[in-house]
Amino acid sequence: MMALVPYDRNSIPALSKLHDPSVEFHFANRRLRLTQDWNRLGVAAVVWDAAVVLCMYMELGQIELAGKTVIELGAGTGLAGIVAALLGARVTITDREPALELLRANVHDNVPPEQQGAVAVSELTWGEGLERYPAGGYDVVLGADIVYLEETFPALLRTLEHLSSDGTAVLLACRIRYDRDVAFLDRLRQSFDVQEVHYEAQRDVHIYRAAKLQARREL
Image 1 (cartoon, rainbow, N blue to C red):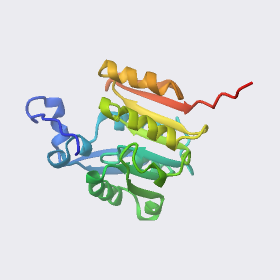
Image 2: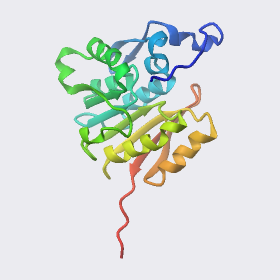
Image 3: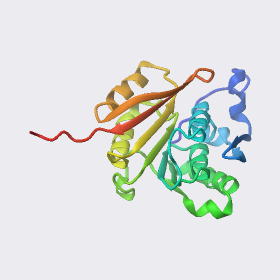
Image 4: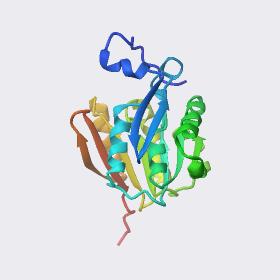
């Protein structure tokens, strides 16, 4: 089941944009128009500020993407993965099955035909069917606002560990809303070196860069 949050669009004005059928951005020298579908898919089908900040961070060249192999987790509308592809990466954009139709439509509408072959949309439920994805096979793992449901944390951690090699950069953009979010980062530090590399105060979004800890060798 996709997560649904019972907001009324008029109750919190700042959230009304989430109910718009589409939103526009300008990244990688292109105008992007992302379709949203709050009424059908809830939080899985809208563009959150964390995704926007992550795209800004990537566009500024804070991480090398050209020619890199990238996977986005919990992609929702796919904004971050689409921008990574426009910046030259080979990208696999993933989410749970109900979000895939919207994801494919956004990729089709925003990635030019000559770059479509560099983008794949694929179903990934964290912690399940990981053998379909190469272990340690990605240069960069992206996640925008995916740290929010505590019951998903163990599966998310397993997924990050599976996808990452010692050379993988994991970029997580998120708001720190609750103690459990801090607890997730603490758990991530058991297997990864985690550093905060950016903070966007206006949107209250942090970006953390994580690198897998090398296995300790017994002396």
